[in-house]
Image (cartoon, rainbow, N blue to C red; front, side):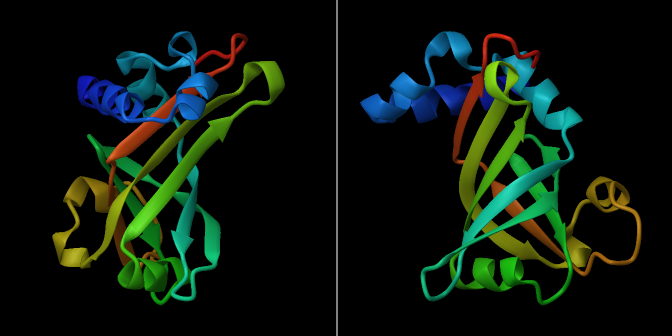
Length: 153
């Protein structure tokens, strides 16, 4: 599974602008093993969506990763849910640390609201409590990573 993330990262950088590629030099990118390890030990991300009028919306969310899919629990009727129904695309920022020891992974891709009956059992089991009424599935189509020299990914 980690090779799938690394391949996606390579594909993303192959199509990146010179400015983006320069901001994320190859020696600072996470390896396949580092990507999987980092994403799987983190639990929260900042999720960006687009409101129907075009204004951005950002909110923190828990996530559960399965390969290139990220499952986001949410309350029913949330702004994010409405945004995904209107514009089915999300961004995720998973970051930690500061200055010379920060790590960041940026993910973006199509998203959909998934009925509870269609959410895998292991995903449902990963979140406790009865607050989750809706799940959103983001399928990563782009992935960029960066680890500062002093960071441990």
